Length: 265
Image 1 (cartoon, rainbow, N blue to C red):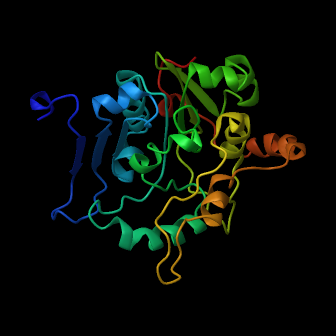
Image 2 (image 1 turned 180 degrees about the vertical axis):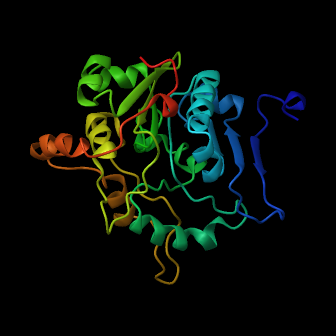
C-alpha cells in the first residue's frame, strides 16, 4: 500500500487482532507518518509507531518484547521511545474509554497512557527532543544521552545488576529490571526500578504535557490538565531521597541471562 503512495500522502495504518473492527486487541501495530512537506519543515513533530503483544506471550518468551523494541528503534533510527504495560483502547472508540483508562492509571503507576500520534505532533512542548516518560524500556538518542550526562554517568546511576543498556545505532535502549512493573498505588507507586531512571533522565523529560486525554464532558475522570501533570511527575522524588531508593533497589528482582539481550553495553 505504501509503495503506491506519494511522499505527501498521509501515512496512517492500524492493524489489530480483534474479531470486530471496534475490538480492543492485545495484538496491535499502529503507524503514523508526517507528510513529506511537514517533515521538511522540521517543526511538525515526529513520525510514530506503537505496537503491542499479549502479556502471556511476553511472559512465556522473556526477551521477545525487548528484541522487537530494539529492532524497531534500530530500523527506524528513532529519536526516542518507551515500552511497558499499557491498555489498548479500541482505535474507533478511544474517547468513550478514556475515563476507564484514567481510573486504572491512577491505581497503577506503571501503566503508560496517552496516544503517541497525538503527543508526537506537539512540537511546542518539546516532544521532538524530550522524552514523555520512562518505561520498562526507554530509548534515547545520543544527543539526549549527552544532555543526561553521558553513558558513564547513566551507568553509574543505574547499577548493571538491575539495568541493561543496548546500542541501537542512533542511541541507547535502557531496560529496567527483568520484567515491567505495574506499580500498584496501594502497594508501591514509586518502585526504585522506575524512580532511578526517571531521576537520571529528568533533564530530558518534557516540562509539561497539557493533556493525555480529551476534556471531561460530564465530570468523568480524564487525564487532562492537573491530572496529566501529576502522571508526568509520578516517579519524581526529592534529591535527598535518592540514596534511600538505591538501597530499596536491593530488594527488587535482578536481571538474568534469560531476561536480557546478549548485546549489553
